[in-house]
Length: 200
Length: 161
Image (tube, rainbow over all chains, first blue to last red; front, side, top):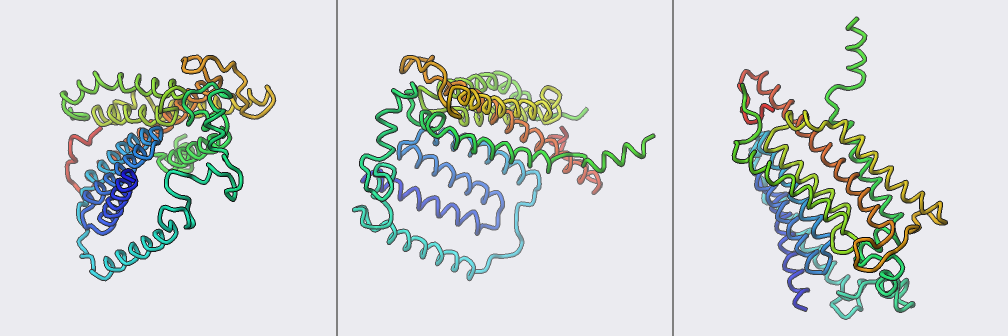
């Protein structure tokens, strides 16, 4: 129960940080708010027992924060002159309230009668339709170390049982990096070709 | 002569620390099968070391040591390495089968292909992110300095990299 309260408090903090990031007129504050939301997320990862994820999230958050800060400081465009109207903020807050109410009813308390399984008892513990018990998650824990030889169960799942998913993940990173290279190319291929044509 | 990067305090601290961060990244990746971490986390930490060097010494000096092109080749090599491990599994029966001896639990030499896959992902993610950081740094500052010049202002010497 204590962890649940902490997670909820951090989630509320993340919501507030995200709202500040959207609504503030100062770009620097917006960037710092996004960073705060990200660090809160890595704290949640730690609390619910996912240190592997927390490490990656934390370091990546630092890099993203540094990059965004560099952009903001380089642009020197620190303020949006147009004032925010109260109506937009009100609508945003109302939307947040509606989402919170929907989530509350979807979770339906912690006794598992809602659409979501109770906290700390994920769907993978039970298998599809909660018929099979124990589910695939318990099987991973029981047989992972013996079948893969990896003491870290996360790696046993990530790089042995579900390695095919990890290949997809790596492909996504590879393609997005290709896209970044294509956009950041300093001289376009056509411009370079034209230059070559003009040179001789 | 324009000053590149940050002050010598930051530069010397970076000289001391950056190597340790890079070694830590490799450690996190190679012991992924024993403790929390793994190739993705290690790669991001490696990119953090590169970001530190970039900020301290400036893009141009960093590029003289390590170019985006090199990063791109290493990135592709890491991706190919990961696929090669998967194909090695295919040779042993199933795509991604753990075809190496599993070893003794809690020892470094355990987990079969998992440590190798972590190494490939470290190379892939690390080189990819470092390359993008380099490209971003050089592209962004080049555009900014050119724009400042066009407006007849002298750009911040800190950004002249």
